Image (cartoon, rainbow, N blue to C red; front, side):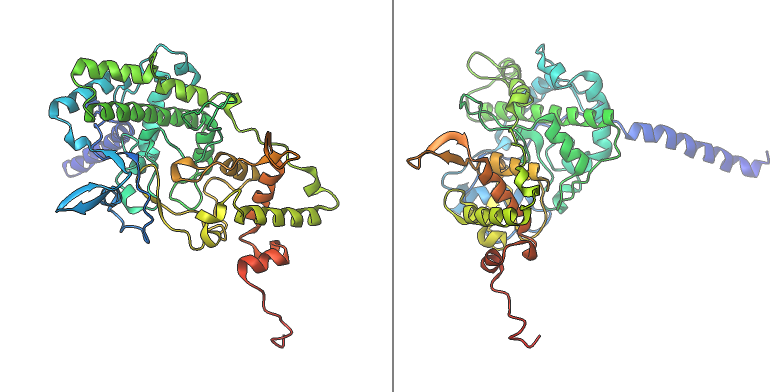
Length: 435
């Protein structure tokens, strides 16, 4: 080969080798990378304020701080009723102890694990092979929005609204589980794997979260496992930092022991792992009743119109209280602080965007189970007895009525005339206008 071409020849091979090796390397986290100990505020109880507008893009941390504090004598103090903790108050020794304790149980981004002897590890598919694949796929598809630690603070996150989900508190909005057991015991509400799979498959309408319908099944399940890993790790970290920052926990040995007890539980408190396992049991799923046959029968148009009317009455009535947050059916909803301290706005239901899904079953889950982290309460419609008092039986018909009203609300022509006039105002009389 002529000398003058040798440089280009080897340069071409170098580029090919770099592309092959570099692509493989770039799909995995560096071996030396560790999950960072969180530095942002731990929001325990957010503000009840209702701001008029969203903050400017790129000001997430500033807006959370402003929502939690007020200026007093030149210093920022918590607003009344607000509870939060600041990890910036950790000493260097405490921060190192927390990181080492978490690394010992949860590994690193390249080699994630959940070190526990409990059967929930297998039940939740938190095995090392699943997590290794999930870590690699998460870095490719998710990290740029959701961040290395699942904090919702990836490089693109500050510039999108709503902000990507922060997994670390163990809170999720769109779940199909009930907030209490059949015995009435209050439960730590979390999504099932099926809930996370639905979001990953379809995305979240009206947000920057895309759907991954073409992702192979084994990859999708591995990503779900890794999201669970990040959430479980983050919730254990949240508990640990809260104890350290309130002066109830100190010393590396004590911190490491508390981390393991937070994961596996103790005689005094259930563990995070058990809470996730409970929420993945079939009996914990909200039971959606069979769709009434009359809405597809010969009188379906009349039955549907009557159902929409009843749903409208329930929506604006005191029993459901929907109109108190979805002001003017959502057209004039005020901003609220959610469980993460960020701002949310109750949905404008006159616009057909359904972040939690648009199927009747999705809407049933949203109404029956609420969206607790954003402040949407559970609607518990009960059948009445002869004296007008609530019974233990659910009034499933009332749920379907509200669903039918919400489904028809964005489309005026689908509403009965009397309901349409109440929502959108009386329609003009074409004859009076000479038309």
